Length: 277
Image (cartoon, rainbow, N blue to C red):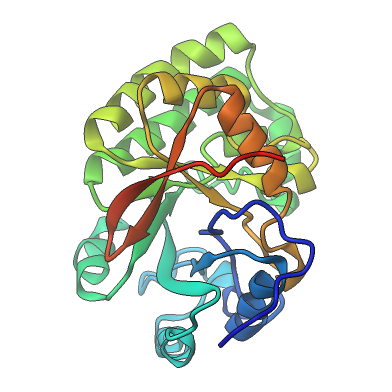
């Protein structure tokens, strides 16, 4: 499959998007591939939400019986030469997820496994339908609990990168910078030791917080620890592919990153960041 780029955005891979199989996005895999090609995105990785037989958050992910459809859609398109397409998954971490994921993630031919946390003790803190619970939540405690769950995610060794690392800020709730730095530092130290990457996710610019995930403060701390980065639009519509990667690239450079990673068969390769215009 060949596409002719029009109005190209920075030549960065987009490693995070969702198709209609996740039940809250629009478009089939081919639609996202075509959109990326038109925009000049060189490589993409599909990362629909992983199914789980325990029924976790079933309204926002494919059923296990639908997974063969996801894999078949990729198989049909895997020989695309522009953009190249990788096979990935976004897998939520929550208590008990390892029962299924530990074996399943190693058995399936994923190129990239993106780990994320969307709930704390059953509270979907980034879910608009549960936003009102923030009114009675202690912000500092919520963030500490969130980072505690992320730490467990890192310690499993099951994931290649963490998606939207500071997701609890989605609706504007976050602790002061000093407290945030103190909370984040131990986690980032753990990440640096593990070799896990961090995603620069532009979807926050489309949310109430109007800021990339993670914040410049956290990304600078990650760079100081040489934690590798990748880029994701978290698209739920083909038109969002590569969304505002110009800002993501600029932020990466501003905090002193010079390289990002590409991945294949779950092995990272460091690549120079493209030049900014």
